[in-house]
Length: 270
Image (cartoon, rainbow, N blue to C red):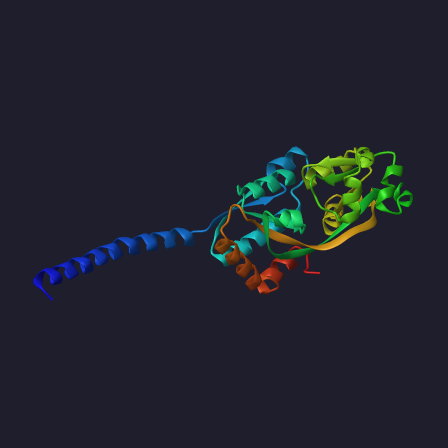
């Protein structure tokens, strides 16, 4: 090889080396950025809103907060939690402005924007009615025989039977929509509704916290039983980040730490 050829080869090697020096730090920086994981989660209640309604923060607020922390700690992420109305949070999740939500029932529509990370609870939606009207309602469609309305959470999913009446204009006078579980309870306490649709465990918790409810309102019908999920925003989180959350939840679900949190609040996986 001529001297000119050797010089050209040396220059090529030097150029490649310089590129590596420039590229590798950039890759390291990108990796460091990806490893940082800070998530924003929604809960349907907030201390301020509950206080405005003159009520106490429900125990499941703290339970749900602990479950979110269990997940994010296992995934190596930090967490902030905000309280906002359920329907608004659904929109924010679609837009990628919040990352996580809990107690989400699976529907094909929601699956378009929410990645169902894992089951965290088996929900039982029930109709709760004033004791004077329990015998009037044999099935959900009979609520049109009531002299008033029932409280429901806006944009909640309570099963097929509820979806039918929710989409029927003739039933709209019999449905009173609330933006939070606390607001729905407040309507019940202030006699603005004759009943409400609620998760059975949550209603039993309300009854424990407010004994007058147990004296006046009874479980009337079971409408829907299904698992509910922790979900992550498809728009806000990369597939890799969502897979990281999937794997983290699989590692803790049903294990010692998870069961200990549930037991502390009197909940179970069944």
